Length: 616
Image (cartoon, rainbow, N blue to C red):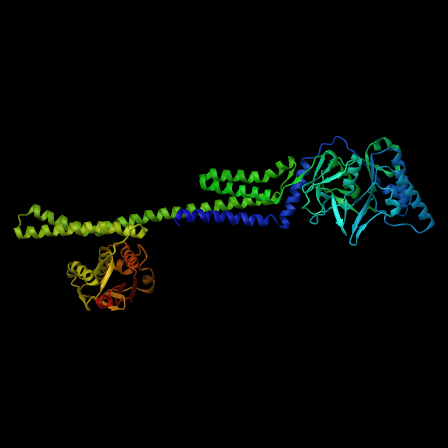
C-alpha cells in the first residue's frame, strides 16, 4: 500500500474510533441526564399555545379533606363531587382514585351505596386501576359495573431524575392489558374506538405516535404552560358552567394524601390526576412529539463524522477550524430545531460525535502537517548535505583535471609527458562521471526508487580495483596496505555500488590513520558468507560513537581530531549498499587501538559452482 493510501486509512481509523467512543459515551447515564436537561430546556422555550382546554380537574385538595373529614370520608367526598359533576353535563368523567377496598361497617356500606349510585348516574365514566406486584388492582365489582371503561393510573417516571415526561398508554399484567386513564377518557369523550398499529394508535382522526416496540407505548406529554383549569371539589356547583361539555378528571391533589406526587419538566410538583389531564390535552390538541429512532441518531452522527473528516482533509488552515465550529454548532442546535418540528432527537450522542470527530480530525491533521514539515525540513537538509558530499567527493578528480590541463597549456612538455597527462585527464574524467552516477544511484537507493543491477562479478576484482585506486592516497601518508588472504567467490549485484562501498572503507582507514601506520585487509569465506574486513591503526572510537557510526551525517571524534573534511554520509551509504545486497556491516573499535569495519556478504564460492555443475 502506498504512503497516501496508508495515511488515508489511518485518518479513517481515527475518525471511526472517535465515532465509536462518542457514540458509546452517548449511551451513558451522564449523557441521558444531559438529554433530559436539553429536553426540559427545549420544552420551556417552546411552550404549547394555550388557547383553552377540553379538560378540567376537580381536585380533592387540602381544604376539601379538612372540611369533609379527611381520607376516611373519601367515598362520601367522591359521591358528593360526582353528583354535582353529573349535574353539570360533562362529556366524560375520569376518576383517579382506586376503589378497590370495600367497607365493613354500616356507615361504610351506606357510603358505598351512595357512591355506587353516583357512579351509575355519571355518564361516560372511566374508573382507574393500579399496577401492583401481584397484578391489577381493580375497582370493586359494584363500582366497576358503572364504568364505561377502566384505565390504568400508572404514570411513567424517569428513574434518573423522577420527572414525568411520558405516559405509558399501554400496560400489561397477568396477560391482561389496560389502556391509560387519559387514553380511555379521550376515547370515550370522542366516541371512537382505539385502532392499533405497530407504530401508533388511532382514535377517530387523531393518530397518536406510540410505537409498539417501546415498553408501554410511551407518549411524550406536552404540558400546558398555564396548567389545567382546576376546581376544588367543594365548589363544583359554583363552577358548573366550566364543566359543561368538558372531560373531567376527578382525583386527589392534596399533598398530604396523594400517593403520586410527580415532577413535570419545569420542576413543578403536580398530582397524578393532573398528569393524566395534560396527557389528555396532548391527545386532544394533536400536538405530539415523536422520538427519533436509534438508526436516525446514528445516521446523523455519521454525517457529522464525515463532515468533520472532509473539512480537515480538504480545507486549509482557519477555514477547516471554521467549518468544525459550524459542525459543532449545528450538532448543538439541530435537536432544538427538530423539537420545534415535533421530533425529539438526543443532544448528547450527535454532539459528542461532532466534538470528538472535529477534535480527532484536527489533532491528526495537526500532527500530520507537523510531520510533513519535519520531513520536508529533513529532506531539505539531506539534499543540502548530499550536495556537500558530492562536491567534496568530486573535488579530487576536478583538481587533477584542472592541474593537468594547466600544465599542458602553460608548459611545453615532451610527448610522453603529454600522453601521461592526457591519460590522467581521461581517467579522472571517467572517475568524475562515475562519481556523479554513483551519487544519483545512492540517492535513488536511499529513497527506494532504484532497481540495482543483478550482475555476477568476482569479489577479488572489487578488492583489487579499490586497492589500486587507494594506493596513491596511502603513499602520500607513507601508509602501507596489505591483502593478507586471497579473496574467493563471486557476488551478485551492482559492481559499481559495491566498489564504492569498499573504496569508502579503504579511504576512511587511510584518512583517519596516522602516517607510517599499516592498513590490513582480510577475507574469509564460510558457507555462503564472505567477510571482508578493513583494519586500521588509527585513534579508534568509543561505544557511543560505535552506536551512531552508521547514522547519516554523524561525524566521529576521530574525524574532528584528524582535521579531515567530511559529511558523515559515507558510512551511511555503505551500510545501505551492503544491506541492499543482502549483507550486513559489523564494526569493532577501541580508543587508541584502531578500528575494524567488516562487510559480510552473500557469496558463491568456486567449489559450490563446480558442485552445482556436477549435480546437473
